[in-house]
Image (spheres, rainbow, N blue to C red):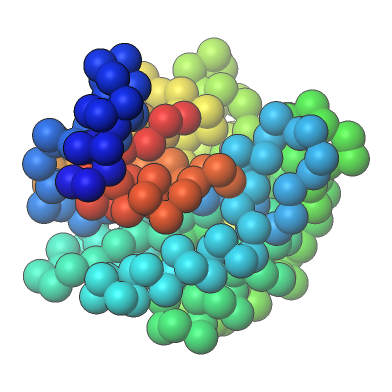
Length: 260
Ligand SMILES: [Zn+2]
């Protein structure tokens, strides 16, 4: 608590600011944290999207922190099928960037971690054209998806085109949810049972479409650590940002604290 005491010395406003930012009083949560990463790779000068780019170096110390705190990795699929008794963390990667294959995979394997990667199936081998930055970030190819699958990484769906699903009619919704599942199952030759709502946009109708397509779990981007797994189609996650300090990461992991 040295940080909080020091802040108190700086005056009420600073103390309040720090306190609001880190929520010192909030108790540690006991559930399994589900972390949300995006791209692993270098920042671009001046890009507002850098908040979703975690450098290779930062990703390395994040994994080392997990190892030091005795967290083991578990894929989302396995978390909901067989809830772990030991201390576990789910690492998820949204959008399916090539950096996950090139930078994250070696770092994960070196430390014995698995992960779940959510792929946008119409953009396989393309770029993230939904973010409006040019040039876009390169996305995984089908071969790279197979490589990840072969290395024990779970492949999940993030829809076909990264559209907000609550806006879609029945045919488009089915294509995004069931169609993307079929595409990934063709590529990996294995069942795909985890889904991630693009933009965290979902409602009861979307949840039903995901459940009826044969998925067993789905993640949102609303922050927090799920208390239990009673609602596996609305699993909260904690964002890991490109600006995270070690303290930010620790608070995200143990208290579910992170800004979007
Ligand atoms: Zn996304």
